Length: 270
Image (cartoon, rainbow, N blue to C red; front, side, top):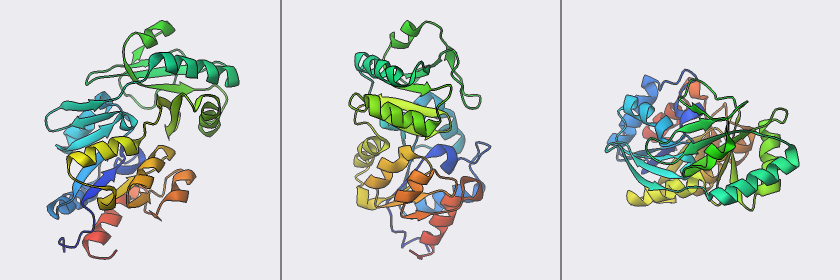
C-alpha cells in the first residue's frame, strides 16, 4: 500500500492545519504521517511561529526532523534542538516601514519576535496575543529595536486583518514583506522572505525539490509555499485567498484534513 506514495516531501503548516483547534494533533493524522514516512516521505513543519513558540509542539509530537519557523526566517533541527539558519529584519528599514504604515492608517499596536532559539516575543500596550503563548510586555518602543528581530506584528484598533495587510503592503511593500498568518496576526518580515524561501532551504538539505512536495495550509501566508510545491492542499477552514490558489481543498483541521489526503494517496488514488 505504501510503495506508490507520489511525494518525497510533506510540508505542513501548524495552526489551523496540522493542529486541531485545541492545539493537539489527532491520532489519525499522526498515523497517516508515520505511514507516509515509512513509504519514504519526509515531513517538514512550516510555520509562522518562531522557534520558541514551536519547540514544545514538536517535542510533544516526537518530531525530530527539520522545521521552518518564523515565516521562513528560521530553519530548525528539532532532533538536535539547533538553529541552522536565521534571517533577521533590517531594523532601520523596519522602522521606516512602520512609520509609513502609521502615516497611512494611524497608530498601531505592536509586538515583535526576537531572533534566536530563546528569542522573546515582546508585546506592547494594546496588542492582543492569541491564546496563552509566552510573551514579555514592553512600554518603551525603543525596547523593540534593542536586539535582532525576525518579525514585527501589527494590529489596528479598527481595521480588519485583510484591510490592515492591504494598507501595509500599499504603504511599505517596498521595504518589508507583509504576511497575514492568522486571526489578528499581520506581520512585517524581511523583504522577500516567505515560507517558500525557508522551505526551499530546508528541502535542499534533504535533497528534495518542489516537484517532490505536497503542501498543506490555511492562511494567505501559505500562498508562496503553494506556489513552490507541486501540489497545494487548503484546509476546509482556510482563508478564501488560499483556497483560490490551491490544487484541492480537504476537510478542516478538526476533521483530519491532512490524513484524508495522505490516506487517499497511500492507497494509490491520486
